[in-house]
Length: 149
Image: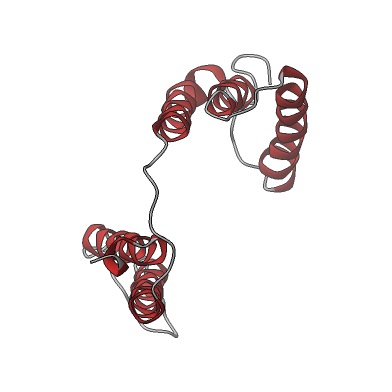
């Protein structure tokens, strides 16, 4: 029973669950062939890769044992989830920059150490990188700050 509660076995089960969920939600997409790929081809292949890796990780965990799983830490999981939801709600209403700042601030509250200077540094660097990648590099039609740019 201890092998079924190891970190490796549980992470393998998580991979398998994500693969099955992706296959379920992508089943209505046309798969196509390797030459003429449909919109469901790549997601389905990635799902199969997740299933295979998850199965392999589970088998290796059952054979070798592994570290027992710890009790989950709920503060980081909760704060990151809240940050992602806030980002999704703010992105279209306020723009990329405010949504990103809120995401980084809320998610950083979930950590053991909170240093405001490091968080502000992360905000600046990620804001510059996201602006360069998405707005300038890819030319996406997103607003950096709603109503301004």
